[in-house]
Image 1 (cartoon, rainbow, N blue to C red):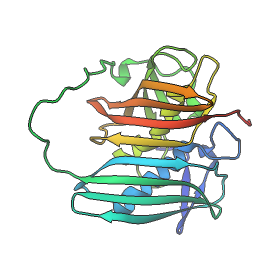
Image 2: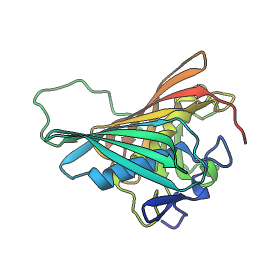
Image 3: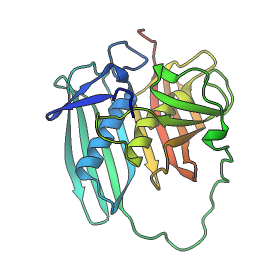
Length: 256
């Protein structure tokens, strides 16, 4: 990857770059980079080929600026079948987000036949046209399948990352999907008048890690009452369904 990464590592801290600035404030970071860095550090410090990172939940309760970032992790449970890791995103000495990751030991599927949704039937990414405009100044690549962010119909799209989360550290399959997962919020919550909700969390559920660079998003649900919204997207790769991304959000006006 030749694009500027979201963070540059300096000793035990991470210096954000302007490539990670989000849509709500010209001097604050995008939620996807918070999620991506927390997921990356959890995997780097505590991951293992024997364990599947099956769930990552990230709470985002403060818009961090471009101050140096520290990530602190803590082992909550270090069992044979289940591991639970907490991590905290500290920006300029202030906590801005936290994560919990559940890693499950890989074994064999249980016997029997279980009902499954029909495959989503989307064309492969290379058969879809590139998005007319580069999203967020080139923060990622997109190949839309159906629906638009300004429409009121179901939406489906392919997304691929174009930047490293941390400079010099190649994206792993897990990091590739968790850094993209924040897109579940605008994909689920945007209306015909644009995006009016800022998500306060993201939870990613995975039964397997993605193969290849493209992640498919398919809107599943949206609901909102009194300015509080919840939404869900199904996640796919070119081989099929891999999991889901869920988010809660608050009604929000842009400062830009």
